Length: 467
Image (cartoon, rainbow, N blue to C red; front, top):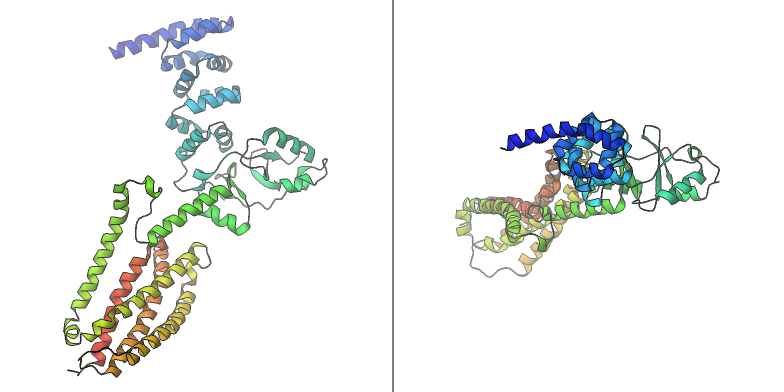
């Protein structure tokens, strides 16, 4: 039944095509509108295929908004392009905003970059966000965060003509602080700060005052590239080009600030030993909070079980010299704390590019020296503690040997913790993981295990022969 209905309507569409041409010729737009409303969008598209581009454009201008977008989606790409070229911006905006996102994306992807940019300007902010997300730009790329709301000028204009253009077109733009100079192919060739423009002679051509040293971003690059470039060159806005150099949008400082906040929040979550939370705390469901924390918590719990396994290997000396257990928290906490400090310093330095992967050996030497000095300071402190306030116990351990064990262990654990904390971020980055994954709990767990091994191994060596 459905097939018969579709065939009948398709046949009807072909039969009334001459009437459409006649009504267009007679400018009987009211009757034509009423006749077309009764048809399915698929049949309207089929009916107007035989019309000239000018006639198709007229048909679209008289169609209701709710129907024109559906009909537009059914047309071949070449006919879609012809209609948009012939239409005014207002109606083009209506059609694009009413189209289904996937159909609109498929259409935009077929267009040259400069045409896509112009059409994106006609979309509402909400629809533009959807369109940009679907246009093929990778997730968390610069293309996802850019806006097409900027002012582009011609190098042959004068200062006076440019100022007149700004007054006419700049009111609704994202920013007018920087103007972009394009050639005839819409490729970016220079930029101009409006501050410089104001103080120039009105008759001067733009080509004489524009700056050709342009810092550009690629739409497919990671969004962190935008924040790095903006901080490095101290610019409030940066242009974004596609693969052929066509200017497709800009990134402003407020966009970058959002990225910085997002990336910093993600790093803090990872350093805290949990998966990154993409939404505000109270907006996240209770189940989401559990899921984000459970995975890492389970991994760290397995790591803690490793500590138990390690301690089991020293069961004899633990039972024989219980006094050693009194100082164990001091030893392992020193390693965990020093490792956490080193990891935090290195992770942050890598994030802001104070250091790079190639600097690992310099950092190693620097942290080795830091660990030795800090270990000596903490070891000296614990030595005073053992000498001045010896624990009251009937243990057979000589206090000289006890002081020696604890002091050397603390110093060695601090050095190891410092090196682990500083080198782990480098290792993760070399393996193409986020350095922030070397979280505080992870470093602490590793340092605790190594600290126990160092402490009790040293005790076994020094106390060999003691009963």
